[in-house]
Length: 215
Image 1 (cartoon, rainbow, N blue to C red):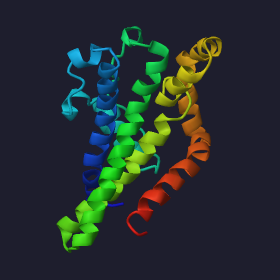
Image 2 (image 1 turned 180 degrees about the horizontal axis):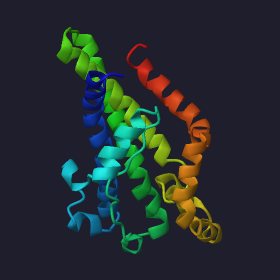
Image 3 (image 1 turned 60 degrees about the vertical axis):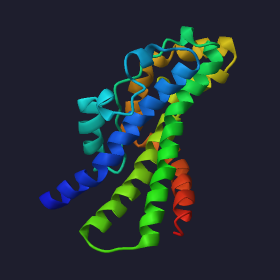
Image 4 (image 1 turned 90 degrees about the horizontal axis):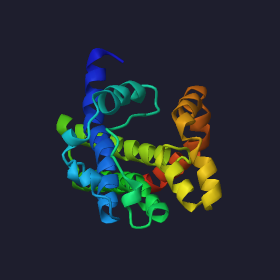
């Protein structure tokens, strides 16, 4: 890919990546406030302003670098949640955790709508092609982040959800694995095992979303 192609690639992915990652965190913050913990709200993390959530490395540098590998990875500044403040900590943890991936799925559907409108109206030229590519990137980015974060490994959202539904004794034993979670995740990514496990799910979700566009 030449320099011009790289610049176009970055421009296409910049908007979907920033909003996918930051609104994911805002979703956690809104859910936490709804279920009784106002920690994130008091710190301004329920804002839809991406600047409130951006981590220069996790939200900008890492997604741009990993996007070239075909497997997007990144993060925003984690939303602080005091689970003890939730009305029912073990139960409500599930909904707080699910809110992030839920926001990504909603955004994926939003980008499907954008693409549908563009394809229905029709057009030509650089600007039209650019926004078609942005919408396509938005669908892929949000599906990827939703599925990745639902993987049942702490500290990912899927791990929180699993801990919430496990019996108390098993949940406690499972939670003791959290300090090793990121190391395990990196090993799964590097080895390709993670893609083998979540790739089919991502493929199925993308197939259904593109079916809405008539593809």
